[in-house]
Length: 418
Image (cartoon, rainbow, N blue to C red; front, side, top):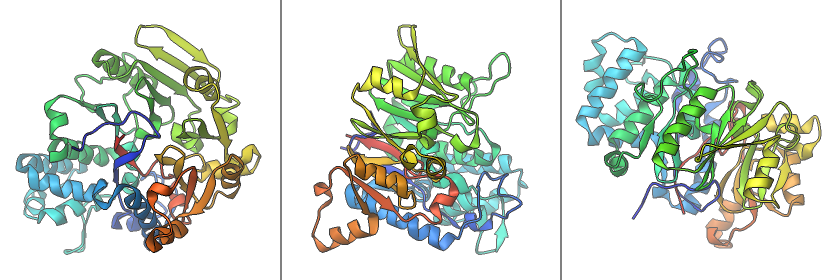
């Protein structure tokens, strides 16, 4: 029986939520790109082709039915819950400041079309732009995090991502696969203003999923960053400790800078003994430190992420460095997500093909490196089976995907690992 549970970053991946780049991305103009938090103007057809290779790899390892697309989940939730459908339409009309007459227009759409319009903001049939696109929805890591047997629905720092939050709440509240979670009160909603309130000094609550990593069932890392506030970290810590979800909250303080927006832009764990890392911050501790909040009320401090891993997780942890730890390659390849990998199982992870020096570093660390298209051909011919793949870094086509500033870790929201 399928369950919602994730207790590590590297356990065999069983089910994951993704979002294929949608037509809304084609409507981003250079003047609006900063406002919509999208760094570049991308060529959508190629971006979709590259994303399809990414999801083909996931499907090969997990099975088609376990790679869940957000638009399909929204459609199924609309089909499942009529009251929820009415509520999400009302919420989006209110947030987007649309005329109330749009209520009937949206309500009368077939659910498959409505699911698409709620994401893209564009009614193709009438050639009518209803509201802005949400291009960052491809980064499903940010919308929710599974922590052991709980799900945390995140709260974005920027208004441009607020509709993502609304749609995510709708999925988790109204889709049947999450019904048991809801009944057992295992969904923590950071948008709940009764629990997660601004601090006395007015500091807001915002946490995005790229700043949250579960290392094992006892340790949850949360970055304090450009997008995740210190007050939010402490507020979530208190709720998780009260519920006994984890025993340690590891607060990773990183520079408030676009180049390292979330902690998964500077490191991700890829095996029990390996972390992909950006040397200046993770190893050298530049403008960074770590505080471990323990459930018994005590704390420990470390000068770097490396020191935390060596002292609390694995004394033999090795760090594979972006750009081999050499400038300017480390800065270039960290920017194009050389440190942002998602593990399909221990020692098997996905990265971008464009990060040449970093991929050489993986080879020097003892990993096989193979391009996704080559691997898919081997699967198709029967030369290899997914279960045969071990100790391997799979490289993805990335000319357009990398320009969106997010890697394979960003593009996956795991909801089940074994």
